[in-house]
Each structure stands twice: as structure tokens, then as C-alpha cells.
Image (cartoon, rainbow, N blue to C red):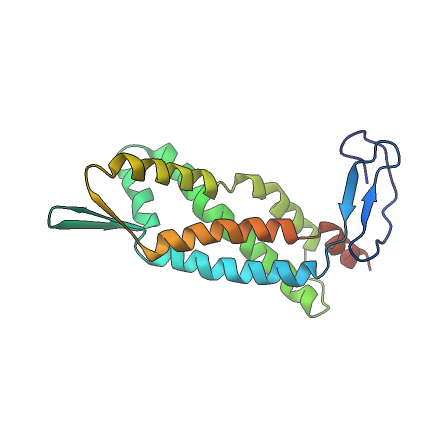
Length: 194
């Protein structure tokens, strides 16, 4: 493995529980042992998938103006952007808030479920590299900041009623972050080599 700070090449060696490998030249952390990494990542991926289904199945927000209530889901919001001539933004929102997170979770489930039962999934290196390459495109937190800014601006014009989907989406952001942090990539590559 190459040091991320000084590019010195090191051999990957097994670490003790809660241990960390550091660069012998600059002292930067190369990788850490994460106990129960695969089990925790699998649990976060399954929990994230449940939250994803909830976030896309129920109303996201409702606006009450007088006696009129208008509800929207995540998908109807994307459709409305597309219908109003903002096709590029609609496609970007669809990719970054729906397709990329779903792809990440499904690919990790494809990798981690067989590993849980001591089997290697087919095309593990290709799928795992794909997950690592597509990860930066998931920008759910940016979308949530945009929603919060919109809520502040709309608060004076209408009563805003958050739906279960909004809370699920917010929880999903934290679950996906925990899923990414808990994943020990070195452990997956070691299982592939074994």
C-alpha cells in the first residue's frame, strides 16, 4: 500500500485488534483494523435499504396554504423538475439522491451477503471497484441542505408539514455515512486473496 501523504510503499500485514498501520517515514495512518467490519457494514446496508424504501414510498413534504394541502414525494419532485424544463437538474438529482445510493447499497449487499456465509461472490473485484468509484457521486446531504434552505424560505408563505419520508431520508444520510466508515476494504481484499 502507498502512503497517502508521502507515497512510500509498504507491505500490507495483518493487524491486531484495534490496531493501525502507520507509515514508517511520515507517521500517517495507512489503514486501521475495524472489528466486525463486514457484519456492521452489512447491517447498515440492510437498514439503509429499508430507509431508502420508506424515503421513496411516503410523502416527503406537504404544503398547506389556507385549506389546500399539496403533498410531494421524492420522485414526484424530480418529475416536476423535469416537466418544468430543468431536465439536467432532474437527472442530476435522480442520479445523486436515488440511483447512486441504491446502487451502493445493492452492490454492498451483493458482496457482503455471500462473504457472511463464507462464499465469494462472482466478479467481486469489479463490483467492489464500481462501488468505490460511484461512491463520491452520492450527494444526499447536499440535497438535504437544499431542502432545508427551501423550507426556511417557504416558511412564511405556507405551513410546511414534514412527512415520514423526510425523516427516513435524513436517517438514511447518517446510515450511509456509517456504512461507508465501517467498511474495511482491506478485509474484503484479504478474503478475495484467500
